[in-house]
Structures are given as structure tokens and as C-alpha cells.
Image 1 (cartoon, rainbow, N blue to C red):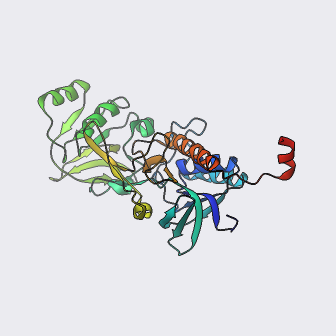
Image 2: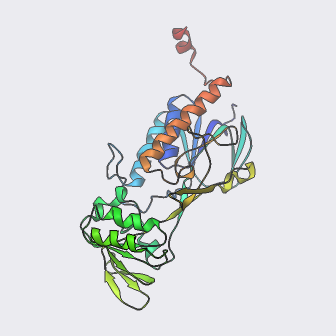
Length: 322
């Protein structure tokens, strides 16, 4: 492939998984194009946490640094949304929503997911700031605040137990979750977690911050942060025509979201396509997504090597190596 619109690998998605994969492949002297629509799942978050060496870095800044690193090794970046992937291993066609097309020998899908949030006014507006889900990602930032847990499934019980590690003031709002049994209520009481019955009508926001949880009857319970259980829905529409569909992932009998089924190194059921990050694992954190991108990239490069596809090596270097 010599045409400027043809690449060894097209990486779709520019979050941690896609960037790490593209960086690894660029360093392997592959021709790489990374296409990103600019809507990472963690865009609302103030910082990335538990990412060694980049603790607290804003997601946008982390991804800007990653793109610069990729370009430093000859990789290319293009802003845009992918509408459809067609073809087969060795000659995939990637069509963008603006009508342009590029071709690739292999595809790394790192499109992430879109969070399905509880339908409560204020939740989406405050999502990623003081409406949170992961104690390890955000617990430190809301430590010692009054924390409300908006219960929508049995997973919310575990949220209440976990966030008690970061605050002595935790309230579980029963909302639409299944009723707790006596043992569960006793467990929460022993931990000092308050349970408030009734359906939540809205979050009360004052001075650009969550200030309370309002029940349908009008009662407002003061809180400084709210915990919800989102369901990430994998972005896979562009590969549906190739037979790749997301399936429900569960943990502890609870449906946690949807993702593609992949092997341990990110291989999908379609030869030539790998997937990494939240599109393949709803439970992946940023650093885990980055690691998955590296694993998938290594397998893609190996797959190309086995197929006899090598990047051009300058004659002087080739002679020195012989």
C-alpha cells in the first residue's frame, strides 16, 4: 500500500487505549492513522487518577500529550467520526462521517462507551464532577463530604459500603433499587450508613455544586457528592456490518454495561480487528485501558510480521544490520 490514504493500521478512538496502541505501533515503524471524534468517556472528569506518573492530569491534557508523542514517531492523527468499516483483513475501508475514506491492513478499535445514567435531573449535568461512580477514581476528591448514593440496583449497596471508606457521612437513597433485606439493612447500620426511602426527584445544585438530594415529596437531604451506577454502552455501530456486536457484561449478577467479546490480547471474532479499552471491557480504568492498547498493538504488529508485511527500512540501516 503506497497511497497516502492507505495505512498498516487505522486506530479508531483517541482515548488511553487508542493512543497507547497507536504509540506502540508507531514505534514499531508501522504507518498508523489515529481517528478520534473528540468525545472521550472521561471528558467531564477533572483529572485522571491512579495513572502512575500522570496523577491528576486532566484527560484532555493527557490525550494531547499522547497525540504529540505519536506524531513524534511518525504516526498521524485526524479529528473525525467513523461511520463504517468494511472489507477484510489486509484491506479494510474506513469511511468517515464527512464522506472521506481511508484503507488499512488492520484495525484497532478503541471507541470506548457512552454512559447510560439514571434519569434524574441534575445527574448528567453534574456527571464527572460531583456526581461520581468509582471510589478509586474519585473517592479521595470527595473525602469527608456528605455522600449520597443513588440506588438503582443491588450494586448501589456495594457503593455505599465502599464510599464509607472515604467518608463517615454516607446516605443510601433507596430510589428504584430492589428493597434491602434485614441483613443488608443491619450491615449498613453497623457501618453508620443512613438509608432514606422514597424516589429521588432531582439533585439540588447551588453555586455550581451539588448541595442536596430532593425526594418526590419535596424533602431535601443535604449532600456534597452523589454516587450513581452508570452502564457504559459500547460504541460499535461502525463495525456492525462486519458482524461485531456488543454483549452485556455482568459482575456479581448485575448487568454493568455492554462490550465486545475479545481474547486476552484484544482479538475480536473478525480477523484483522482488535479492540481495547472500555469498548472491550466496561470495568477498565484509564491505566488498564492504556495497557490493553499496548497488548493489542503488539499482537497486531506480530500478525503483520507473520503475514510478511514489513515497514520499509532505510538501505543504510538494513546494510548495517546484515
